[in-house]
Image (cartoon, one colour):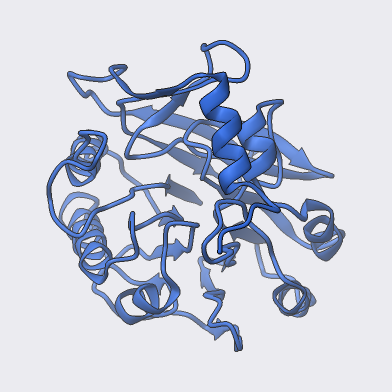
Length: 300
């Protein structure tokens, strides 16, 4: 199983530079141009922050771009699995992307969809014996993520029956973090509850995004991969307590089922402006961001 893993496309409602001067649509096109020679891809995953502000036009643009890429460049009706991130809007996501489980030709392929009073976008599909489960870690209006009790109960029920070749979980907010203030504040807030829900199940890997850089670690015994962002990446060479984002679109290849799997490889687009600073926050600005946007902040 070869999975092309993208995240944090942050597509705007128009094909134009964002407030930081980066054209997110162009970043995606640059990346896909460099990925066009990949072969044997069985699935594409986009783990959240598909749209920058939840605009339906942005979801349509991503869906059409990845559909054309799969059909024309990769040469097949390859499924594309989308999950929600903190920048996404559930109603617009569902209107354009349905369950989030689409074939490249646009058909919704989900086998099971969570029935949620809060319209959470969680679904199940199977590809060549591998089960893909997308979860919804979006907390509306907040930057951090959380998986609610009802969603975790639903996940337990899904995992009660093993898949022929194992399960891949896809959602936005990583359940692991480096010792970085923004990651500690803005990651998944209840990783222990997720670990309890998947303990002893057939989960081969957890695929996430959100941090705009690559990290590998474990949630108890389960491998967790954080893929870097498409729109830009975070540069951790800055002073502790500060944050810098730089230009550069990235994605990952995840390989399952081989003797050394799971295996993870990162691709970087050949952007002539790669590594240019997009924004930089000093220590006071970083503390202010966490105070304003972190858990417990008053967002009223």
